[in-house]
Amino acid sequence: MQLSSIWKNSLNEASSVLNAFTSDSHTIEQCEKFTELLVETFKNNGNVFSCGNGGSHCDAMHFAEEFTGRFRGDRQPLGALALGDASHVTCVSNDFGFEHIFSRQLQGLGREGDLLIGLSTSGNSSNVIDAFQTAKSKKIKTVALLGKGGGKLKELADVAIVVPQATTSDRIQEVHIKVIHTVIEATERMLFPENY
Image (cartoon, rainbow, N blue to C red; front, side, top):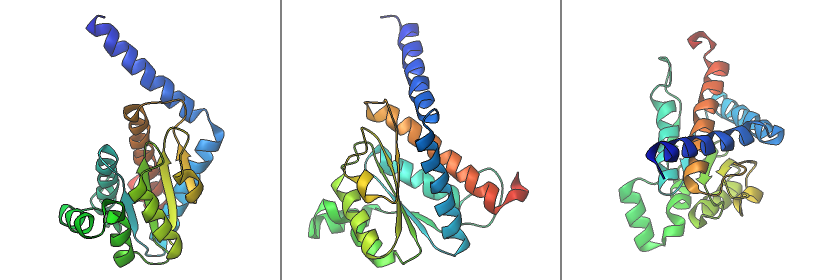
C-alpha cells in the first residue's frame, strides 16, 4: 500500500467516526449535560477531578490543565485536577493494589458537589470503576467518556458519552479529545462570555 493511501484511509476513517458521533442526537444531548454539570460545579465552587489510564490519563491531565491554566483567553483558574500523580500511583498500587489508585485520592480530596470525569476506551477499567463507586458514596457526580459500547462504566455514570462506530482505542481517543476541547469552550462561553 502506498503511503498516500495509508494517510487518506486513516484520515477518512477518523472523519467517519467523528461524523457518526455528531450525527447521534443522544450523544449530543449527553455532551450538553456534561457542560451543564461542569458549569454547575464551578458556579458552586466545586472541584473537577479526572482520571484514566495510558493515553486516557494524558487526556485527563490535558482536560484539567485547560481549566487551571488557560484555554483561549486569560481568566481566573478553575478547580480541576487529574488524579494519579506518580508518587501516589506507586504508593497506592504497592500498598493497596492498582485498582485503588484513583479512588484513594478521591476519598481524600473529593467532596459532595464535586465532579469526576473518567476516560476509558473499553468502559471496563477497574481503577476508573472503583473511582466511580467511591464518587457515588461521596455524592460526587460522574461523567464517563467511553468507547466500545460503554462497558460497565456506562451504567455507573450520571452522564455517559460513548463514541460510536470506532473499534480501536486511537479512534475513540481522537473523539474524546474533541469532546474535551468542545466542553471546555462551551463551559467558558457560559462562565466567561467576555472572552468570546
